[in-house]
Every structure is written in structure tokens, then in C-alpha cells.
Image (tube, rainbow, N blue to C red; front, side, top):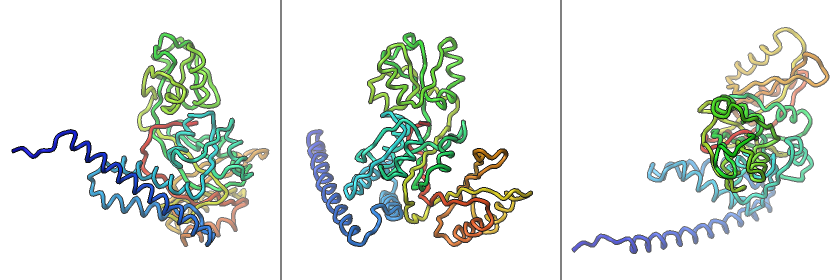
Length: 367
């Protein structure tokens, strides 16, 4: 006799498993709240990146490659952020309106349960964080094809904030409109960077259709929702938010394109074990000054992840340099090197130490 279970029996077992998972999630949430109360008593920070890194590493080992790891990481990231935010809900500012790629990056980092506040400019995001009206901000900082987002870098010169984390998103651009028919599109709207990243596709496939630069991809999505003759290059989040139809997916000119976002706040997190340290320096005007800085870092065996120069406002041919180093300010080599740089540079500012981004897991783009 065949004792193989039938579909109703298997579904009944799935229901039992789901109920067990739900009860365990509720228990985990209560444990997180208890930890939050204990942290309040000892004045400890709510966010412990090293602890979260240890959790993901333990789950990866115990999984033994049975459950797809990217999905496992995504599931537990949402669980962990929800439990952490039960201790104190984070308020996160981003370049609005709703459903911009920056909003998408924020959801990726903080989960669905944080409180998100759309703002009209990157400068406002910095200001809201500096004035403590929000706890965190999300800003785009560089694109692998188009380069640095200069207005984000320049804002670090005007506002006193710290870098708390980073997110890297793989780029997939979608052309959307209300009807889903390319024949209805008379104008294509988007932020300047997506328009630049899709310029060859647009020139080849829509040569007679003008483009319209707007301040965010979310704004482009809103315009397309309100006007049947406007197409938008926008995020997957905007498609569902504004009830738009996809005309063509993946119209970016280059594959492997990514955008890096930074999380800013007033205090950098503790050491996680996989960190970067960002500094801003101005050099004394003498030959070989930059080479001297690089020699100091090399002597300490410090890996330099990035160096970016920006002109000093009001001082012709004077530049400040943004440096990203692999390691935490608490690491002896980083600490010693920064101490030396502080002594010999005309300007020095520590922008923060923060956990490095995980591998790219999500489609996204610039603002």
C-alpha cells in the first residue's frame, strides 16, 4: 500500500510549520524588546553590527547550502531589523518623493518597519540628520559608470554628520508608463544619471522622443502616473507605488553597473570586523604632499578603497580629498595613521567608521 502523503496532508504540515515559525517570531520579538530594556539600563547602543554579522555567519554555517543563501539573508535581515526597531523605531530621511532608488536602498538597509521621510534635496537630508530631526539619512555617493555624486560629497563639507553604513545596489533601469505602450510616450523623464546611463538605448530606440531631467526617479514615476504621454525611467518600487506598466525592462547601456549609497547619522557604529573608515583631508601646498599621505598608509599596510578629490569652494586650484580605508578607527594601524595625518594635513576630519556593504543583492540605481 502506498503511504506517500497527498497534497492536502503536505499542505497541512506546511500550515503547522508556518504557525510554529510565527510563534517563534513573536518570541524573538519579545526577546529583542527585553534586550532593548537592558541596553537602556546600561546606556548601550541599540545597534551592534558585530552581533548581526555573527548571526548571519552562524546561519550561513548551519544552513549547509540547503536553503538559498541570498533568500535566507534577506529573510533574516528583515527579521533582525524589525526586532531591532522594536527597541526604538528608526526615522530615515531620503531623497524623495516616495519610491526613489534611494528609498529602495533605505528599505534594503533598515527594512520595511522603519519610518521613512522623503525630502526634496540631498542637502535637506544632511540638514535633518545634523539637526537631529531624523536619526539617519540615505544618500547616493557614487555610480560605477557615471562616477561620484558630487553634491553628496560636497555636502560633507557643510554638515557635521558621520557615515554609519553603506549599501551597494546593482542597476536595472525600467522604462514605464501608464499604458505600457511605447507608442503613447512623447517624453521620457528621469533623474540625470539614469538618463545618462540609458542614453544609447534611448538614442537607438526612441531617437525622436525628448528627455526631461527631473530631480529624482520617484518624481519621474509620479509624472508618468499623472500624464499618459510621459514615460519614466524609474525603480521597481515606483512601478508598484504608482501603478505603472513596464514598457521595456533593463534599458541600461552597461551591465554590471552599481550605485553605492551611504547611511549618515550623528554617531558611527561600533567595530563589526568588516569595516571601512572615511576621512576628509586638505593638503599643505607643497610638491609631493599627496604622495607623502599615500606612503604613510602604505607603510601601515592599509588598503585604500577609494580616493576622490573635490575643489575647495572659493579657493582656486585647492582641493580636498575623500579617502576610504579598509579597517576601523579602533584598529591600531588605522588609528595611528589617522593620528599622523591629523598632524601633517592642512585640514583633517574623520567622517566615520562603518560596516562594509554585503555583496550586491538588489536591483537599484541612483536617486
